[in-house]
Image (cartoon, rainbow, N blue to C red):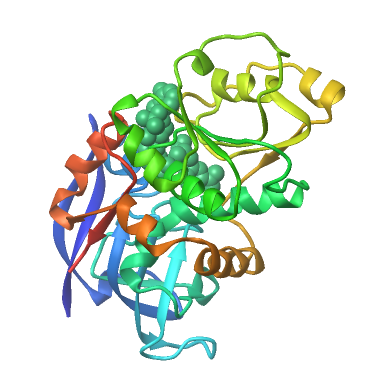
Length: 327
Ligand code: NDP
């Protein structure tokens, strides 16, 4: 049976991504076949489908680092026909066909049963970005942060990770400071739960390695000078979860925040997180994410809109989460 998919191919002058028809013969090996209902455009997808970043390690490949859908065939006892499942990361869109297609076949180990609370649409409104936001919050909690510790900063606030992080943290009782380059989105950010919105400009400039503390913790999606300045202004025994590189993958800092204030820098890797951690993150999202706030952050597009959306993501013009209705 044929199905529609995006396919990214390598050409002499870069990569091209087109809408094509594939058949089940084109699917890669795996124990579980899924009728994909929704995928998303994460920042990493934007890099992959435009060729702006080296994400794919083989071509041609179906992009899409995540999907949610219904199992149609399974050789693994953990999954039965009709189960709703979600997949994030692993080899998707790197070495294995990803989620931007009507059908996917993957290793059973890559799938998580969808918590009953979520529809497949909501699972992708969360997507890899939202699941990563929860991994960041789990890391802050692991480092001992509580709502009584003080303010928590979220950088890249209007982005996918940032939006979900604000919604969950504010719901847990944290006072959230949102850093953004888009002052026009002030009402969106306070609607998600931010208590204060700050201009990202000064945080993105080269700064001093150690300054007056301003927050007890942070979720940083930006990296580079921003992360260095965030660390420099983190309170004693504070915790910063670093997951992104929207400004850059460098980190021009010193050891001072670590050795003079006991600051913890927690690294977040969503791609190869263990099954146990994934289950915990999805269960915590089911418990701690307000569905109305999730709906505020989500926009829906079709498969044919993905490439244009990806360009807008890289230009910083997309707010919140973009869900792709692949059907
Ligand atoms: P989005 O594109 O949705 O959001 C990124 C946000 O960063 C933008 O909305 C913008 O927010 C801000 N931003 C963009 N460019 C710059 C810049 N040059 N300087 C400062 N801020 C900037 O991406 P996601 O939320 O999906 O992902 C965020 C980051 O996290 C990405 O780098 C992504 O690769 C990474 N990531 C990492 C994962 C992991 O496993 N470690 C998993 C998922 C994502 P604003 O306009 O509000 O300032």
